[in-house]
Length: 133
Image 1: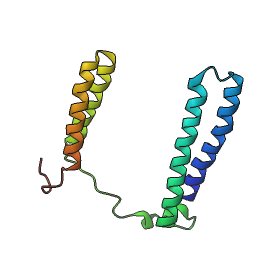
Image 2: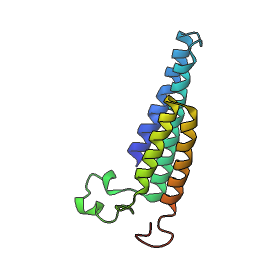
Image 3: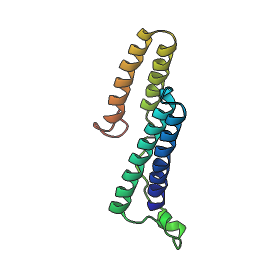
Image 4: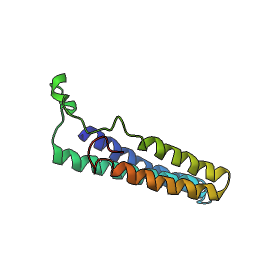
């Protein structure tokens, strides 16, 4: 993960002087551009520091070594729910939330309520056993 960590850290460090130069060029009157670049630098630095510490804690992966074989990366990659309906409900909640931004604020509140229900359902999906909906 060292390559990914240093890539994000260097990109974050690159955008700090770029945002400063941009701020001087617009005389700090256009707040969206330089502020967005400062936020982009902060996000890149956060991801880079997280990857750096995670890489030190986990150790080198097969992807990090030149002499690694394909079979070294095989095995369980995580736990996924192929039969879960909660991502669809969460997607509908997000769509209704964005619709609320365009149509009216009252629709946004229905979407936020549905999003809370979908997140709770997705998180606690396995608390009663497999295939329990």
